[in-house]
Image (cartoon, rainbow, N blue to C red):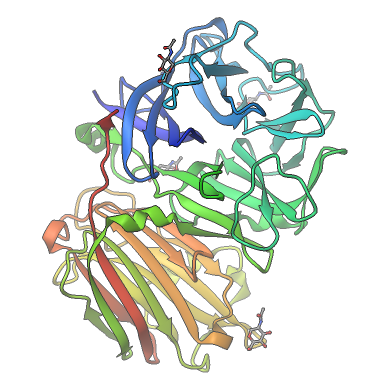
Amino acid sequence: SVHVDNFGTGPLYYKGWYHLFYQYNPKGADWVNTLWAHSVSRDLINWNVLGLALEPSIRSDQYGVWSGSATILLDGTPVLVYTGINRPDTPYQVQNVAIPKNKSDPLLREWVKPDYNPIIVPDSGMNVTQFRDPSTAWHIDGQWRILVGGEKGSHGQAYVYRSTDFKHWVRAKHPLHSATSGMWECLDFFPVLIQGQKGLDTSEHSGRVKYVLKSSLEKARYDYYTIGTYNSRTERYVPDDLNGDYHRLRYDYGKFYASKTFFDPARQRRVLVGWANESDTVPDDIAKGWSGIHAIPRKIWLDPGGKQLVQWPIEEVEQLRRKSVSVTNKVVKPRNHFEVKGLETYQADVEVSFEIPSLERAEPFDHAFSNDAPKLCRMKGADNKGGVGPFGLWVLASANLEEKTAVFFRIFKDGHGKPVVLMCTDPSKSSLGRDLDKPTYAGFVNSNVSSSGKISLRSLIDHSVVESFGAGGKTCIISRVYPSIAIGQNAHLYVFNNGDVDVKVSRLKAWEMESSKMNNSA
Ligand SMILES: *[C@@H]1O[C@H](CO)[C@@H](O)[C@H](O)[C@H]1NC(C)=O
Ligand SMILES: *[C@@H]1O[C@H](CO)[C@@H](O)[C@H](O)[C@H]1NC(C)=O
Ligand SMILES: *[C@@H]1O[C@H](CO)[C@@H](O)[C@H](O)[C@H]1NC(C)=O
Ligand SMILES: *[C@@H]1O[C@H](CO)[C@@H](O)[C@H](O)[C@H]1NC(C)=O
């Protein structure tokens, strides 16, 4: 059957297994009649499919089982809270809970819906068709809290509900936070350590933490977040940067939506799982028999500067590394490139450190682009000669470079001589193929490249996916590309420099990657 894998819902760790639930439509590659499918993994890389976890079966979800989250209760029991549709004529949204039928089963194969469902219904005055995606709950001073996303006027709302028994929920007077950004889907709210990469349980609440509030913007289709403080008495969250809701920090500046994090107690880290849809046509999705993928899970923590998060592919992905090649201290002259030879690169992991000379030749930065990195990147693309850069990688490139996806940096300087680092993925030449969506993705990188003279890039290449991490994971871009020539053994990897000054590759290491084991049945 044709199906759509969509919205990661409720990742969790239980008795040695990672569980991922996701919206799944067994009847078509579009987004109706979705159910919750369920896969499990020992390492977040190789997955076994278990089949359906939730499907419409009770009055309060008979017309749809939509997104939600998992919470581990104080006694270790996992629960799923999800949005159900209870009316045939309009997507009227209520929140339901499901619990494991057999807590001793580490695979949590069967879920039951207690008869006290639904646990939360919209109050009068709320928009009943914009009230969904309950978050993971957190527990402080004897009370559980959970967020439900909503929209009032054009303001995204993070409604807070509280409960002592996880059955009876009462809404707090005002939302945790709201901002003028349209509907907030798939809210995620969690603490991060002020110093260090260790992850925290969602209920951890102390002076050592900051909070992250993530919203998926229904209209813009991207995940943005702010960092701030949370007061559990006033039940308010306040972003540190009061303009944070407008500056729009994003987990990923590419195709990345409806993501969720969870605390992994086995490795004491917080893991982010995001979803990337296709840029291909719907008829092609139907021909493939699937659409949408999950990104490689990422470890996520607060940058020491405290102003943004940092992400890095979970270390388990490195088990797929095979043959490798290295390049050291190679200078790439202006308007030059070289091929990284000696390995297949259609499935590869590439880590590279660039060294740049002074910023003397950097182009002046025009502040009109401060809030529009993609526009700047479209104007000054990979083939557009610059000062310091553009330099970076051409991945999934054909031998004659008719096809290539550029992942690169371009460094400007502002009026005070401070560097402004732009990171882009430019897929405009990625394919000679059919009618594809090829948007340019870009973000700024908060990296002090002037003091170190260095900047790093890592790209995970996997046929139609290019996932890139700039400056150690400060800025991330995932994109979908569908080359027509540069496929399989005809895919090449290059380092290029279209700037005005030399760029040195101080170190590059590229690995062929083995395929992970997917879709095994457990
Ligand atoms: C519950 O799961 C355990 C572990 O998989 C299994 O041994 C046991 O038979 C299950 N109990 C029932 C009632 O299915
Ligand atoms: C609820 O939200 C939908 C979708 O944005 C909108 O079309 C509708 O007008 C809203 N209804 C109310 C009562 O505000
Ligand atoms: C999915 O992809 C299409 C085309 O590339 C895009 O217009 C749309 O916004 C995407 N949806 C999401 C949820 O990212
Ligand atoms: C960046 O580097 C310069 C030069 O070493 C230094 O003066 C400045 O304080 C650094 N800025 C930050 C934010 O680290």
